[in-house]
Length: 586
Image 1 (cartoon, rainbow, N blue to C red):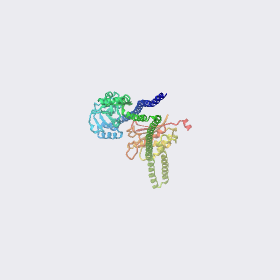
Image 2 (image 1 turned 60 degrees about the vertical axis):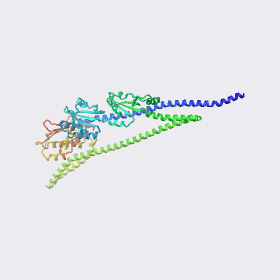
Image 3 (image 1 turned 30 degrees about the vertical axis):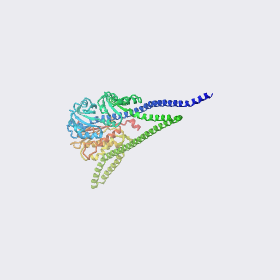
Image 4 (image 1 turned 120 degrees about the horizontal axis):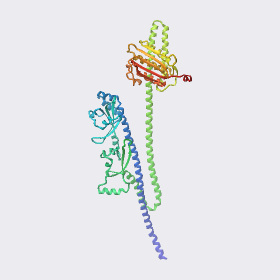
């Protein structure tokens, strides 16, 4: 009994170290398992996060490239229609061509602009050093002459890199006069990418590297540029073997370093963009967290009697990790809020600027219209005042009162014109009523009577006996007729026997034809453009026909012009005629 008791008492103390050793071994095994699993999980997680960020950057880079290419592709189309460049090529006078291209370059923001004549010689360029150089054998010059479209070319340079150009032929009368060549500056993005840790590559549809942050890759295929480079020294191979277990198989190698490859398609001629991210950044993040885990397990091994506190420690680590993620999320949200506020402020400033510009444009149009439309009654008032002065000097007061009554009518008409000016800045009008077009013609002739009396002009008027009713604003319609009469008077100023014919006809539409025997119209295309005039400075601002065309359009009709067969100009105003049913409804 005693011996057995002694043996049991000796077995009890020897059993405690065994349990402790077993617990330590289990803890070590657990620590190794947790580190391995955590390493794999964290590596996958950070790799996915890094790859997602790379995808976002690729989308941004691709969008910038496409935006730059699309913005520049419009420039040759606009320059190919420039009248100054076409005139320079036709006349062979290029003294101001380079200055014009330099000014356009600063406004548009392209790399360079060159103007080539039909022989391929540079006759105008933003870089004056290339003036006189011949590019007749370049592909962008040859291809531009074979088509009517804009040609894009990515040609290798003689030194390093590629030239990205848009070219388009300049034609006149079906003949090729020259070619405009606009260079696209894509290397600014390459320089911007060079400041990043990632290697960025852009390849064309044939797989050739055309843009890259690694100069040795330029001009090679991506397969040749990305040939696997294994570590050469024994020490490097040992270090590589010790670290390969801790990461996924790399997508590519760059100067002996493993890289993560991310690629995307650029929606332009089959181009692709590829980035290579160093796995070292992922490894550093994972190692930082693994170091914390190993430190935690070392503390647990040294203080095994606090095993029960492991759950609280894990919870604390999780809370710290979540807190760090929340801080990162909060910082990102603050940046996004700041950016959004900045964009909203810029948008508000842009809206205010646009509103102010619109107000200034309307004020300019109204002031020009007032100056033109009030010029007619003012001229008539001047004539009536001169006549009234002579009548008073001759003591013919009754006839002078008649002139004053006409001046009063003109003043009333000027007030009506100013009230109608607000309708010039908007489409259509509301104060429409049935109007007899014959009465409008008679009223316009009465309005022009003082000016018609100043010189001999034969006026032929052909009006139908029946009413020609249209739905219109009487005052604005009379203004159109007066503008046409004034233009006819000015056109016949230098004619020996001036004659103006007014013909009003009513069919499907009401048509008023004003014909003169002047010199005709030289530029029919720009006749109705605002501020276009053939008169001398001070005699007109070129708004009469533009305003008249706008009024007729608001009334649902159209105003056209042509040259007559026997000479002179012919203006036709067509308005929808007011039928009996519509007149009864009104």
